[in-house]
Length: 131
Image 1 (cartoon, rainbow, N blue to C red):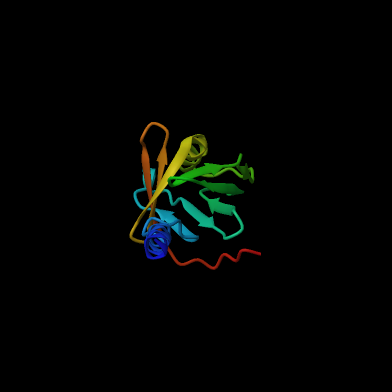
Image 2 (image 1 turned 60 degrees about the horizontal axis):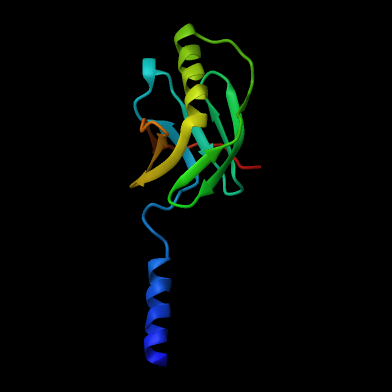
């Protein structure tokens, strides 16, 4: 009986170990941005994120069970930029609160909204620090 119980404990521990879908903090760039406007996001270990389109943005994110993710309201700077870039930024800021889940596709991060819209972000090198 003890051997069966130990085998069950080991099996459960193995199943709850790290998965390939685990969220990876780091810097990401939208793979196919509208109007060729770069969209950057940086995720930090402490639950903060930052980003840039025209304006700098910052906020918090919380990971939930079953690959869930929730973003806090986003704070942004208030600079003006090219009209097309400003439209991309407004659209992104309206979409981000609708994100409910994520997937890791290799090193790429896929953010998925409540209506199934997917935004694919590829990793990129950044000089952003998390201080």
